[in-house]
Image (tube, rainbow, N blue to C red):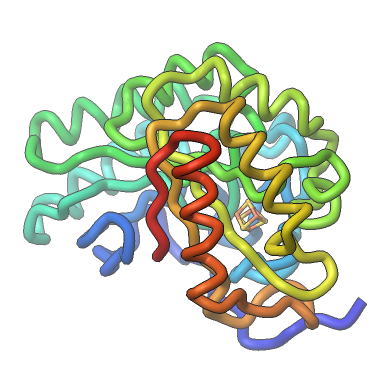
Length: 257
Ligand code: SF4
């Protein structure tokens, strides 16, 4: 396998930013993954952090690599004492946040800190949706203002090729999303092989969006060095055409970023 170079560096701390998020505005990041590895259930070919170094379906046995709820509360409270109020506080960072074994408790604790120290900030998560089938995770996601869930493919075959899941079934992801209320889908489109921007892939994708029934869809393409050589950006006019199909055929509002 040939890898591209100059990936985004892993976040070195629990709190990072605020960053100027294209989708959220000023966003303070919370990394509840490791600071020395990207712990993720996917190994997306377009990942800006490069190839996943800890590719797991669950974080069982990895607890020592991950911050505790107390660690996160302390770090967030300290950050909010020194920086201007961000528009969002966002679970993201080095891997998949919902893999943390105490994700529900983490969400409750971060909400309390937000309510006390920065009540105007909204809470978001950028999730790959691999745990959406877990009712406890879904209940935690429902406590956030903006759960933003990944859906890049409309078939199990393309899901496997683009997201390279570790023991995660496409049907379970779709079923989990279908059981959620009031969430956004985030979708990254790429050209090359594998690619998900051709007509057949988009038709499957639009059907999957219709089944998942998100409140909105965020469409983008890659704009940085990514995990695999050969992954190509999709032109903006093609992204706009995909967004139109989502609106017209799935009945869901879609924006491109
Ligand atoms: S889900 Fe996110 S962190 Fe995980 S491999 Fe894909 S792009 Fe990277």
